[in-house]
Length: 170
Image 1 (cartoon, rainbow, N blue to C red):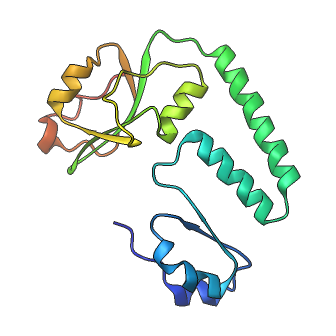
Image 2 (tube, rainbow, N blue to C red; image 1 turned 135 degrees about the vertical axis):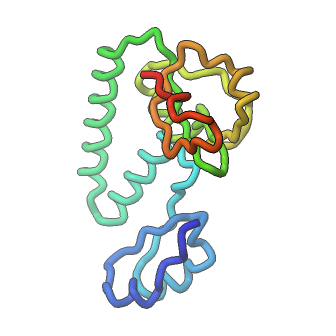
């Protein structure tokens, strides 16, 4: 769990603008706003498209809307080039494994949105409105991950797997 930011430390920096997390910092929004103009943006569970929308909001907030729109357009062009050049029969799944459990990044997560934007395939994961889907080893077997390329796994504890090579595909 991340600690709450130090309001005193932020005030000492004399910021022109504070960009805070809508979920974690909503309760201190008024305090932050008393230091500097503050915008709350979603970060946890933010989709790829929402991330691009947040970038535009930041561009507007710093009077750089046209430059940000141009940069987002360039980003779309680059992603289109990647999409045209990427071809894979593999399926891709972003995931995180810690000593607290395993989470797949679902289709509505940032990573799932990037996979889709690149024209790549992801697994058929359980339907949920959550960006991150907690799963057990048994559920992983039901998803049938044979042929899937696990793109990101962090901190694979040997206490869960018995070995650290369980997820070393790709």
